[in-house]
Image 1 (spheres, rainbow, N blue to C red):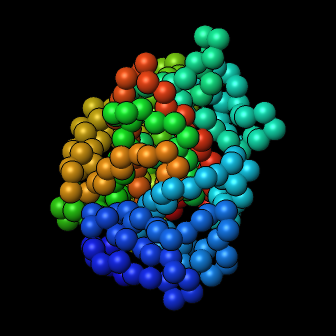
Image 2: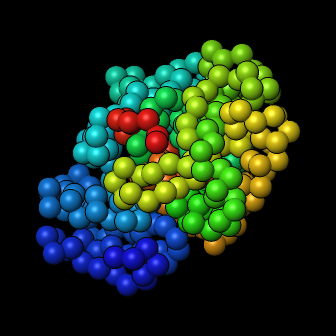
Amino acid sequence: MNVESRAATTSRSSNIEIIPTGRQLGAEIRNVDLKHLDDAGFSALLRAFHTHSVLLVRGQGLTDQDLIAFSRRFGDLDWAPVQENGRRFVDGLPEIYIVSNVKVNGEAIGSLGAGEAVWHTDMSYLDTPPIASALYALEIPPVGGNTSFCSMYAVYDSLPPELKRRIADLKIKHDGTYNSGGFVRQGVAPTDDPRTSPGAIHPLVCTHPDSGRQMLYLGRRRNAYLVGLGLAESEALLDELWTYVARPEFAWEHVWKVGDLVIWDNRCTMHRRDPFDDHARRIMHRTQIKGTDRPH
């Protein structure tokens, strides 16, 4: 099924419907209860995941244990990263990461607050980044907090041939100093020199292990550095590449409802979040499917 197709398709193994967004990525999966998904249904969902990179499933009633069980069908799970408040995870459930602005007795229950989360790929500063992330909506604000996704396949395909040749063999350092909300990661000394900041080095152009397609692997803009280039040259080239990320034709925006689950492929997408009123409540629980190979 082509990612451009707007036609709904039905899995032969079940009554699951796959409804492409009509954008460069993303599809909604209908007629499914993720708590009772049989093997044939999961196979259909997995094929859709590889085709569309981002899947939306609405109307789910998942406990944290249900979220973990569903996510684990994609592979082993990472433990959640340390939050800004120094807590690592939900008691007894180390796989659950809380994304929230809510405070209890003055202490944040999760990460990232209510501000904008800029374009990024989850945990790309690790040597072996996660394959995918799943985010489940428990409480949402009345306005704002939308999440947008962009296709790094489409971004790479759109680059002029000369620019593709220029970046073909470059490697990029993915900064581990700041998270996508701009907060310094727990236990890391803040720095704004990308040449000395902590983080993994990956190829700038990677090949997806499942699809075989090439994509641009940028991670995030802040403190990124193209290894071997002078700082000014690195900054200028990165700025040029990031102008393609900002183009709306490569993106799809999701407006959340309670009970929505979205799972995305971290290897070939980036995502961002709109800010929202900090007096409103937003609580999301996230899992990460552990990476198995370095990007290459």
